[in-house]
Image 1 (cartoon, helix red, strand yellow):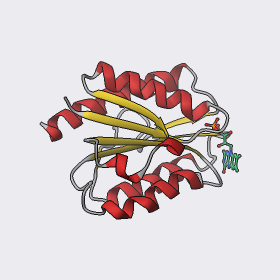
Image 2 (cartoon, helix red, strand yellow):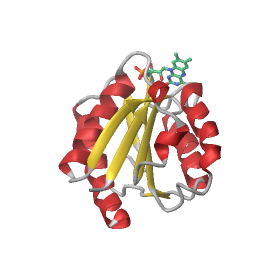
Image 3 (tube, helix red, strand yellow):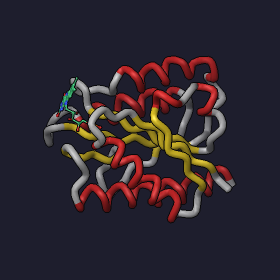
Length: 158
Ligand SMILES: Cc1cc2nc3c(=O)[nH]c(=O)nc-3n(C[C@H](O)[C@H](O)[C@H](O)COP(=O)(O)O)c2cc1C
């Protein structure tokens, strides 16, 4: 069964709630999912999965340093994530709070690893965005992201 990692950093719980909702979607899409705090995740862990979805609060328009550290540590495995699937999500305090730049910040790293990123023509285009804690719209979006992600990982991982 295709295996997906949802790895997140969250100080006050908003991004963590998104992580759990996305994981629910991955599961209902038929892939195995593990949800982990970034502090409990090592670069070694990353190679174990067919797909990785990362989440961070928006901090000054970019990811929290804890997530950047994981990405920087992952250089040890450069080339080994090539062809796997990636996605990203964030919570920020404001609508135009730098949410999409934060998502793109994380996706930059995954793309440089050679990973495949699927946009969404109907949902939040780059990845999921919540203003503070997820509301009903974001809940739906997160589950949808998880389901779409599972469908793609299953195709790619076979
Ligand atoms: C250091 C720091 C920087 C932040 N920078 C931004 C920002 O640039 N834009 C914004 O909208 N919110 C910003 N926020 C607010 C957080 O993104 C927001 O509270 C988020 O929901 C926290 O997620 P969490 O509950 O998962 O920790 C910042 C918060 C902190 C602590």
